[in-house]
Length: 284
Image 1 (cartoon, rainbow, N blue to C red):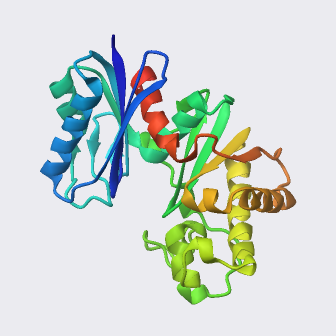
Image 2 (image 1 turned 30 degrees about the vertical axis):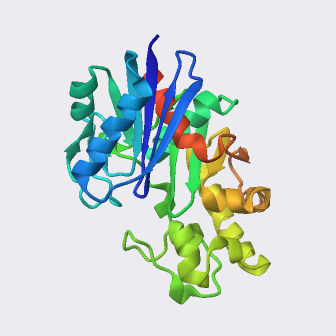
């Protein structure tokens, strides 16, 4: 019996799963991400070996932070300092003799939502709102890519914002006015001096308004049918964030139809299930 393997390679933890030929999860593993590159690569191989358990691997998919080249599978995730220009695709295909696909974690999460989230549509935008902010846009189930195959960075748009403490604004990219610098987990800590779960209702109102303005831009530019939102900040606030931000979006939207906005139906497994979708279907 053959199997598919998915790897979610994060800066703090490694998640791995195996699935059967119908995409049903068979086994899951989790481990802390080693700081050392070689330790991390060895651990990944050990996890794959345990999941495969001697079975033929039909394909593997992986999610990781950018930047990367999805065609060659060379990765350099920012939050893993020793992982620079690592030919991950070549290493894994040589070791396991099966196709291996890797892409930016938000693109992979979008695939997970599309294939396993219970609602397929021609134009699906997935947003993760967690430590940072990012997204992946699918057209007919295929990843939308920018110039030279680049990954559009939706968290780095500018919006008309509300902020009681503008001195706390600042984005890791260096720009002064990114949406990520207003609504992400890191941004919330900088602006309000506490984690998202401790925000007051007035502070959440600011975050929600700013996120809604971002949704308005995305709806106008991408014109998606559905926007699915995941990530720790989004799940922590839940439907209050979705309903409030959607209201702001609709109030400022004029020339395009308002998309359906909802929480991801896969919880914290969106990217992990996306790796299985990539393993089964490949990435274009």
